[in-house]
Length: 85
Image 1 (cartoon, rainbow, N blue to C red):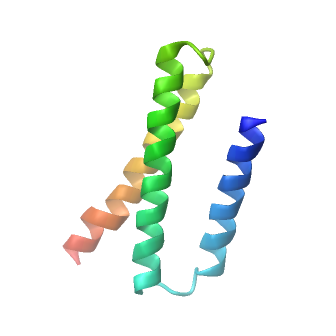
Image 2: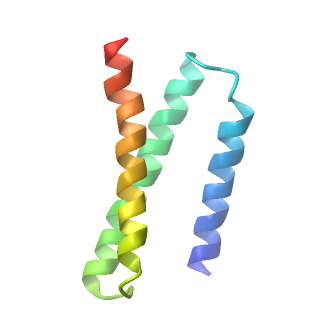
Image 3: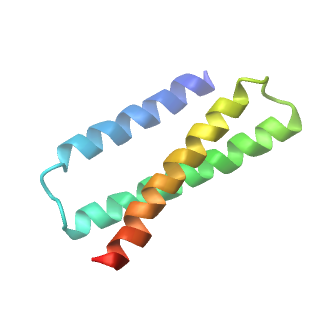
């Protein structure tokens, strides 16, 4: 059930990203990058806590790894790349 909810959130994020794809360089894009960064950061923290508590099996590390990867990607594009331009 939780994975279905999580999948729904990911589909919502994908749809939102698709709908604002032509708004490059605007405040909307920067705000979405911040929202996605926070979203994946919380997912990584909750996944890590669940993994360390033993609530997840060994495949739970893949969820944590993907969440960390997306957190780093969205953090880079929101904070680092924006400061370089």
